[in-house]
Length: 181
Image (cartoon, rainbow, N blue to C red):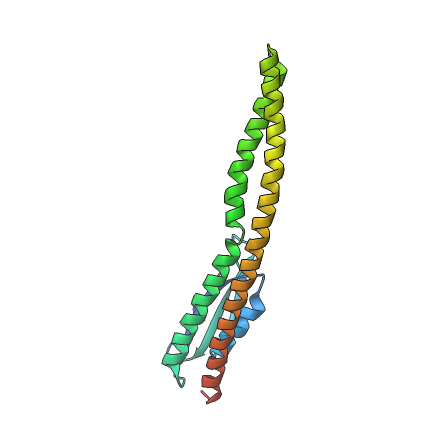
């Protein structure tokens, strides 16, 4: 990504942000509410799902201090939204992956015990280990599925709350800008 250096800093403020490509229109609309206009955008050199967008707005605008505070609040809310989106299944992953690996170890140990058992006790121990790992895997799967659904519900609730917060912030910005810049 290369940005053009010829900018008039006496008349305009400039801003460049990185946006995930899943919701660029919503984010661009938010910045438009704060009087920012897109002057260029470029794909990221390393990541396919990120674009860099450069904005400008007039340096002297009415209610600039309040708009800047609202913009900081909006950006904080957007960052919160990105964080909860990134971590929406972290609990189920942190629970499922290590326990799944332990369960696989139990199953493999049971299979090896059955295969190389030299006594009836070893053979029965191996069979119980394999059966226990199957039962544990079924219970784990059910619990992870429940946790996964709970995480989705929580994500939807939190993201809806943040979306409402952003909408309120942008509405106030539109009202301030409506007094004409």
